[in-house]
Length: 127
Image (cartoon, rainbow, N blue to C red; front, side):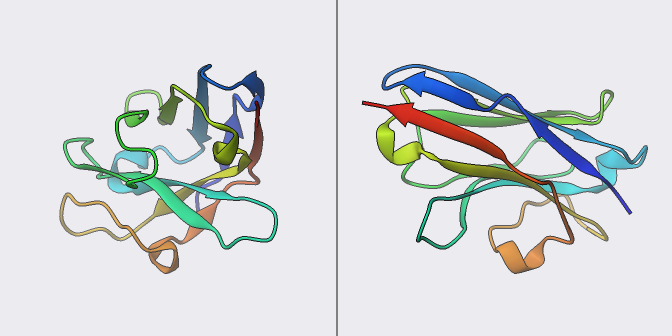
């Protein structure tokens, strides 16, 4: 099992930046594909960005492409989401997710593919 703890959320004005961090408890962190999801009130959870075990392959949703960047540091068991040019519609609870048992170096774009989830961190963007 792996425990995921998100941090870095908060209140920011439109156009500002935040950096979310996700700390994983597992020493075999480099074997996990990782993702960031978000859920706004009344809406379904959606994928924001995903990254392969090595970090060489990444995916970003169209809604955040060019503004958000996912990265990871396997030596520190950390995954990050750098969020720039934030918009009020980015307001949501952001979740870190991990997928174990990955055979190839790849990312996953479907929430059903992830085994483990963090508790979430609130991001609020004011206009």
